[in-house]
Length: 134
Length: 134
DNA sequence: CTTAATGCAAACCGTTTGCATAGAT
DNA sequence: ATCTATGCAAACGGTTTGCATTAAG
Image 1: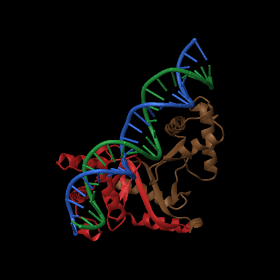
Image 2: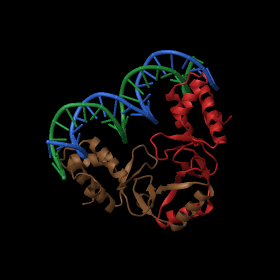
Image 3: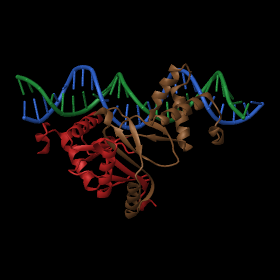
Image 4: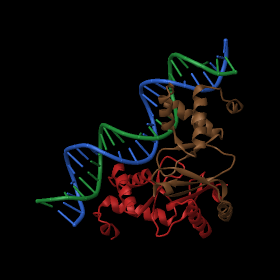
């Protein structure tokens, strides 16, 4: 069990939240804390919103999930992959599609170097209207 | 006067805020609403924080300023240029350096096209430790 | 049994809004 | 004189925290 290795106790909230993150990942979706909370309530689980936030923050610290702010106020979360990827975000339906482009990755590293920057991370968001929303 | 052309009345808050944005731009800095508010108070101007936000939102709508969320909760603002640019953001001192890379711009357009996306905007942030902070 | 995790409510922070007043045209 | 812009305080949405309680190890 992943959780135990990370030093977490196995609890219902953590299990359920992991499950939802995995489900979201399989559908390539990003999910907000509030959404998870709602789904938990609907499923009859008596879990507080504060716990959802606490668990997500712990998971983030452990490197298990990524928190994105896109251009909105509310944060969305996704299970972290081994490999980095960037996002296409639909401005109408908020759907996010992932992609990786080697050429861009490479150029980014070069630009950082050029400016004497020790790159720790990077984020590329392309905003637009997705095929379904046009 | 720029403001008049955009249909804005010329008022002290708007003038002062524009001035601060121009000053920030000359130093290549991004500035938050709260920071502007503080500076205004310190300069003896009796301007409310709500007004700062209102003016910034109006400026943004008019295309005069850009609002960035980087990876934090609070937004920062900058005077909009005619041309787009991306950012190198220092994770220590928060300084942001601007850059434009034609190859990346071009690849982004291609990726959007490839996914059937009507690109409206895009944002690339490279996070790291700047030369001064190393 | 011990210590970490939870639920709840209250606090918090950045931002927005309603409203009566002041100011630009 | 008109109508927009302002200041203030209260509301807001998302997130965090304090505390007493519960549950995992």
